Length: 450
Ligand code: UDX
Image (cartoon, rainbow, N blue to C red; front, side, top):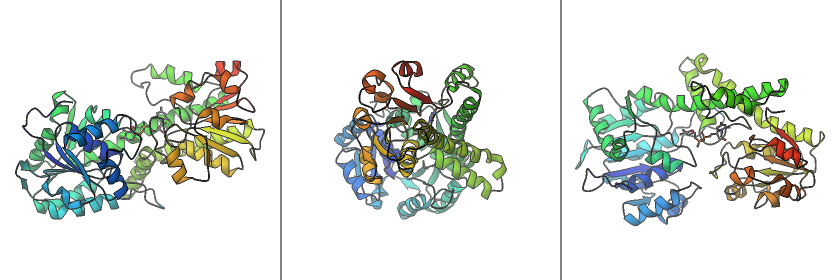
């Protein structure tokens, strides 16, 4: 990894919040040569990170964590005052959905700012002190934080993060763009210069850097996620239409995706989107727009959410249909628990949702996942599990594929067919070859395909 060649030593950074975003950010910044302290209130998480154990599944992260810890440039603590020596403070805490509301819960952002305030000052021995907001927040939050920290002399930059789970290290070290939201005065310019120093390695590679005002920077993140969610729900809406017209949504996606203006990516129809970002971000966006009196402008996001939720029920309905109208007591193997492959994250996971709905209908569900079973045990100990697809499908009357892990995509329908009680499969991600599975005697049902 390239060392910050412009400096003899790295910059002093603190990272507050060590979840997917913060832990990966802290390790990557240390790997780039900076001195980093990662701070979190979760003692178990800090203990694991300090010992070089990744608290979540993220390809490439354990290696970079170990290297950064060995370099002596990275440490973790639950002590918020450990941020005192840093010049740049990154706020990376979560903004989950509030209980009983669509709005974002800002308590962790507020707590992070409160813990920083007594430590902030205008200047560090290396230059201006800067607070960098990376958490995904509703419009107006950055302005509020800016008003809180301005009296200390420190400056704020809003620097949204676009990392995808499963590609966190790559997206942090090689982002496709960097966005700074700054105030329009000299202070904002000085703050941007400091962040340029932090990201010197990335900027040297000519990664586009877009400087905006605070309001725009906060919106960039929610607008990007809203667009991605809309694209997925668009193709899932087309899947619903295919289901009544006899069309094949996978062919439709290929055919429209060749138009560069539309693009091929994020056009995979299936059980829909989940995870810790897209679902809660579109809800929080709609809720904030309503508060601002512009609910109409993003009302379509409610529809995007509804389409997405309907696809989960569609998989359940297909399961009931495949089992002749009654799933009671029937063994159903569910392949996948995480919200997407390469992740063990169960937050708002369509796979887990489908498994639980089938279980609630009386099916005997056995779930499997290459990485997420530990989390399933913690969150839903009532769900029966098996270590792999073959074990889960033993004597099953129905197989439901809901997370497209590679080992499920490449299953041999003939060999796999040997273990089940009946060759019935629902392809909730449209990743299996229907012709091949049908030729092996399977009753194949996809989403939006005949
Ligand atoms: C997303 C954004 O991509 C990222 O930029 C942002 O910083 C955080 O939110 P992530 O939640 O990691 O990242 O997942 P992503 O890869 O975007 O997938 C989200 C969901 O959409 C998954 O459940 C995935 O299975 C689903 N999806 C994705 C589809 O159903 N169809 C597609 O074509 C693409």
